[in-house]
Length: 321
Length: 276
Image (tube, rainbow over all chains, first blue to last red):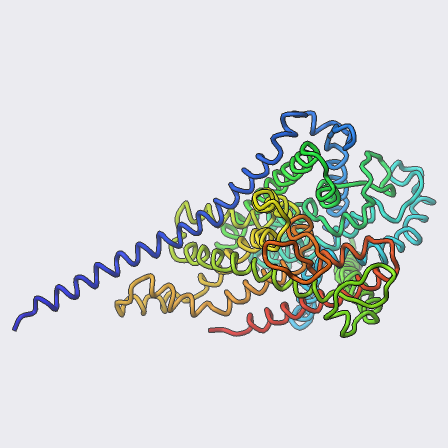
């Protein structure tokens, strides 16, 4: 009897499968590197390439000039940066308290039945395409703001610079409120997860000392989760900064820097959406691409910060609990 | 502080938390109500299958845009799903090292790319080199949004598969790559399908990346190298037009779009409930 062929056969097979393993690892790894890291690098490269003309023409001045004049080929992005900042901050100011209320309610107060009904409904808000929110914004919400929200603000708070001057339906404030609705799902769901990751000992200790449920939440639960909640807020900020359609449909698309929140404005994303296909001339197009580059850089920084905070919290604190 | 006051505060803040839930639902209900109220009258067979008519002529519809949306989303899925799933497989199976964690983190950060930026990216990459707006360019823009989402959901779904299953397979002498594909991937399939459907639902409603990639077209789809009408872009064009009858049609388009997106989300819930 001769076993040799058998062993050789086995060995061949073993070797084959080892190379197949390596091939598989190399193949999927290559796709992961190219498809994710490569994609990120490629986006950055194309954006920089596309905005070279404008970068050479305007340099750093692009960031602080407020002229936007396609006729004379003079471009500065300040009004758009300002508009993105104001509308996103408004979204945070309005949206975060609501999101925290929702997160606390779902994580600490609601029964599991109520939670099972409400959670998908809040998630549904995230599923609605922004173009539809924009459509609703133009025809339903902006008129509502003009007729029912702006007049009392002017009457009672008109002494503040934020509510001075004529009121338009399409305004920073309308955009901010619409954005607030849009960031509620992400901010509330990440905060809820953070609150759920807080160890029960924290609550029990506070309750055992005689705290009411609300005191336990504010003394023992929220401070413990504050890092991740902060991350959730920043995540929402990233969303708000990058949102395009809903904002462009309700902000009025007027590049100006004014204190009044009831006046129309413009944002980085909106100006690109509005003017890109109409941009005549290479410099005009390049300036728009540079606006996109700035938007991309800001959104990526904000998002990376948020993710780093949330990851660290959910891994470290949530992990050991 | 007296106990009564503290109890009152407890109640008051509990009510405020519940109130915030109600407040968040108001816009949702208002949106759904508005879409149904203003859109239903536009929905008929002609609207779903016809070509848009010039201003002033009654009738016509979004048939080409609905068809075009399916094509652009299809192109994006053909590019985005294989790349996303394979990259996710790598991260779940071999990703427990510096490179893997970096890729995973970058994918997470990329889920936050403003959608308008993916449009510019596809414009510079595809439109400029082809010299024309095209369905392909729209697909590339949407795939850019899709890939990071699919990567992360695939990775998470595969990591949920019990280690024992994998060990059993390896102990039987099945090579790792086969174990990854036949055991882990197929066990995690519902999770992966959930992620894929979520990504498809998300890009189906995207407008900004398509504005200057797939652009718009008043006629039927005519090859992937030509501009094509899509539902979201059509809704946008009609919504910002000055014509009343176009507004009504925009609302009609919104019904169709919301229906598609909600159906996909229902499928997601269904797939997410299945285990193994």
